[in-house]
Length: 132
Image (cartoon, rainbow, N blue to C red; front, side, top):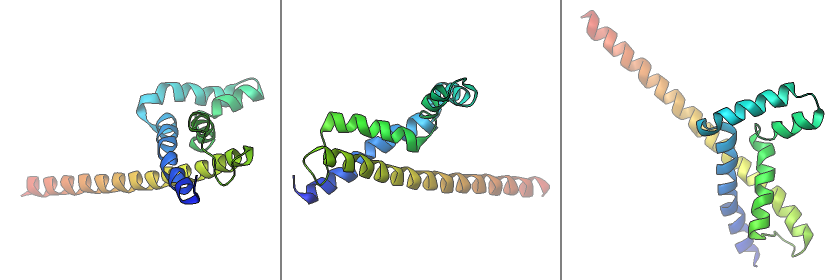
C-alpha cells in the first residue's frame, strides 16, 4: 500500500475508534456499566481488578484496546509490512483518535456554554417582560 493511502486509512480508521471509545467512556447509553466500572476501579481489592475496570472509564486507555481490535479486523499496517507496521499503526491510530476525541470534547463544551448563555438570556428577557 502506498504511503498516501496508508495515511488516508490512518485518518479514516481513527474515526470509528474515537466514536466507540468516546461512546463507551462518556455517553449516557453506557452510564450504568461505566458507573459500575468506576466503582470497581476505585474500590477493587486487587490491583489487577482496579486496573481492568479503569480501562472502561478512560477514553485514552480504552482507545488502545479498540485500536487493537480494529487492527485485527483490518490488518492495517503503517510504514512497514511486518509486526513493526502493526506497532506503529497502533500508536498512530490511538494518537489520531484521541485528537478527534479532544476536538469533539472542545466542541461539545463550547456548545454547552452557548446553550447556557442562551437560556440565561431567555430568562432575563422573560423577567424584563414580567416586570413591565
